[in-house]
Length: 362
Ligand code: AMP
Image (cartoon, rainbow, N blue to C red):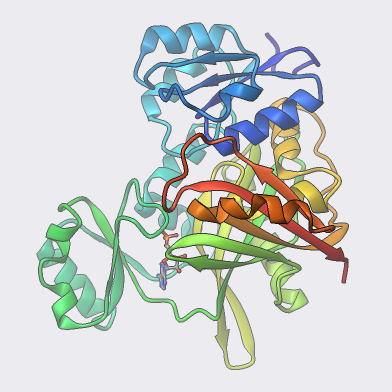
């Protein structure tokens, strides 16, 4: 099997959530098939895919069979075990590659890579493995900081904001004494993100940056265009480009940034990278000729990237938990495009769908 796919070939996707589902839908539109590999038998991506495997990410036999049935493997979440990727790579290209997984799975590696290899600004950070190291790190950062586990943190989980002496006591115990980093608190004006793609041939394309608003640590809305100076938007594009080039990356990536005002100057610091399609890029589906999902499919298939130019202004709203009950009312809104993920059970904090509200481009 070559590394450039033909219509009719199959993309293997690790993970069966809404991101995998939307990648599979974009692939299907272009005559490609998808084979979803996920341990959860109720995965929303299964119902839109040609094939599925329900097995653990450690199941070497199932992984081998899966790898032999597809032309390329990609993933919809960054915590793919390193060993899983190594097994698959013996048979088939895994895109994005192992360096992207290694860097994005560990906040210490990520911050070190971003500052040293990709020459991007990040919050000051110090490695912390125990309470004594935490106290020493706090002295260095002026007594305050954000303590984060190095691995498996998301949506504000696995982190503690330390502002007062009371926050310090027992902080490492609260994090389960896992390896961590202490970051300086960034006094940001707002949070933005940018979706970037890099093809097998090295071409890089970026979508417009989005303004992100979080509620209870979960993304609630992404608005585009972001309300930031033109030069700051260009800086976001330059940073994202440096990151994907330094990683020799193939696929779509989400880059989350803090916007910091320093007098008249506006600066960006990278908070986090996600080596996959990203929730803050769902607006591209209805506002751009080629969505982030199609772009990802094109990249991992070895195809030319599509145009990311935005045709509309758009506000993407996540439907979280009971928000999904507004679906009928949304159908009556003329400029709203509704996407539901087909999840059987509504739970608090669970992403159930999203709405893109379009307006004329400014
Ligand atoms: P994360 O899990 O790293 O994406 O962080 C979740 C949220 O915590 C971010 O979206 C920010 O709102 C906040 N946060 C994370 N790191 C910092 C920091 N160094 N300074 C201030 N706020 C932060």
